[in-house]
Image 1 (cartoon, rainbow, N blue to C red):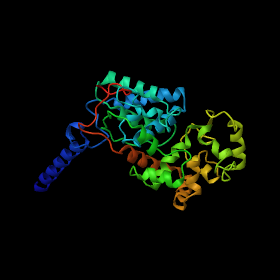
Image 2: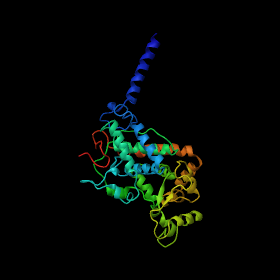
Image 3: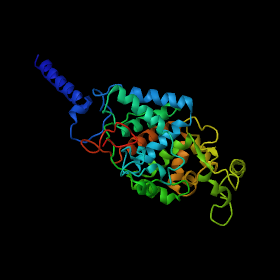
Length: 335
């Protein structure tokens, strides 16, 4: 009987601990932590709502999955994952949407508006725009055949934006390998994260202006990039003439721009990476090259690391507790 009594005490303690671990935000007040069940009581349908809106948007246009994922990436690299990219010009706010990395290319804001409107209807003043965007990025992966992961939640929204941060922190399509790695490192992300997160380019498109220099003037001497596979380069020149056509689109992954898989890495090995920032992962660094080969050979390994790196990126400098606010409209601060 004594043993049974001891067992029941231990079991009871285990249940209490489990409840503390799994409960919602009420048990985390002031601790500033992100955790997946943050809205379990305050807005239990939050993830379902986000998933539903994103699913409709991707059904209308498969490309939207890549656009939403890119918004999350460009948001997190500026002031952390705080929804600052979503702010329009207003009052003291100078929008990041007009920065060099975002102007004319960042898209999907209307989908975020739709998500936020649905969340406000269900549970007003509860779910942040930053969390909504983070969930949308995860759902964009799943809806195109990529991995899923538990999203830590509890971010709050910024009341400021930073155009200079957007211009200086976000890696560009023509950056060197060392510049790309440095910009990731400054956000607490390592080489493995660089390669895995770049794998998101297995979906989506890029404008000619982002890679045209590779076709005609890679080094400023009027010569094309010699690392670019010749038949692929010839095909790209048809879409992107030397003069004009800067807004024409080409698939980042030539055969599966709407399907999240590991073919992106296979094409890098064939010197068919669209952007310079893609191809340098294979051509400029031995450790990076080995990771490209690894993910090209094992899609499951890539998916596992991509999910891990997305969680890591989503944890960059979040606003929590009483910091920031929960915006009613993702495009403007509340006051």
